[in-house]
Image (cartoon, rainbow, N blue to C red):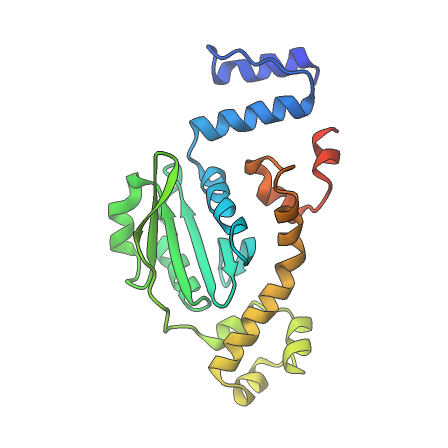
Length: 233
């Protein structure tokens, strides 16, 4: 699109705002800033969390397969901490099932929720779950997560690949692993495997965080390509 076409496309978003840009990168920068100022959707909440992760010595991951669910954000350091996001634009319809899947896998679990859903979320969530809300575009911890005692080793093994199982346990047969390793040993191996799986992708976006627009962190996590190359196309 030409500069004129881009200006025409973005004008309906905020008719009173004058968008003036000299390049695609400048346009994307303004659009990103506009979205962060006006929306509190899933991507906005993800980038708030991601920025806090960058300040810690951890490995993070987006969109992690978790049994029949897909977890929004995972943090791995000495423990696994899961974050499910439900913005005010989302439904809580799947939350009960998602929370059970996460309790089978991860040591600490949080819901990041728009205040509109807070009362209902409290009724749906297991007591182990912590809750974050958003106020004035900042995360606020409403309830701390409790250490999860319901982890299921068989479930943990089920989300690992055959290759990962063979490398760590010398076998990809779940029943054999369950018979020869304790639940504690499986959980420690589970964390080690996930950390190894996501380290390269996480470090890619962390090291380039100053080059990546915040709403694009997840995109570049899954597509580790030079931001300048993508933004200038």
